[in-house]
Length: 215
Image: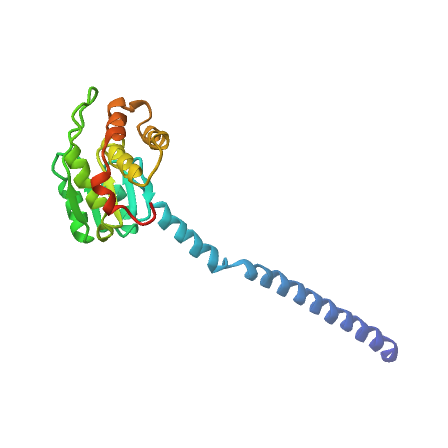
């Protein structure tokens, strides 16, 4: 009887061991498979952080690049300071007569930025008294490469800033139609014929020696 039972018993035990090994392998696979997905790759996380940093850079109203090292905008608010800091500005050309706000002055001082103020009244039509001398003095600062990079701004970045930029374009030998087109893009419905008339009649002859070499 023992000779007949033992082979069957051994076969049964062998099958049981084989099943146990299969089950053990299956359980091991079940437990190990999720480990592959426990941690995400680090690179997308770094990219996401960078994207968040860039999203915090908010330019001022009507911000645009005029030329290499020359920018224009409306009045910067505190939320715009990180963006302005990224420009590595040396100077700000401020075209309003009102005192510069203390918060803005602190930002300039902290970042070594010099303020050049040329107080031009922002009258509505009829605006018949654009001060030629102040526009001319502002342009001298703008054209001096030692002051660049710089930002030109008034309250909205439309009229006073538009006149300074328009006269700069004349120095750069832009045709009047192109000068007016640029002015109107920023002034939009608030465009003033007196501003355009001023730019048309503005005499650039005394400033030609300051003209950048790329004009």
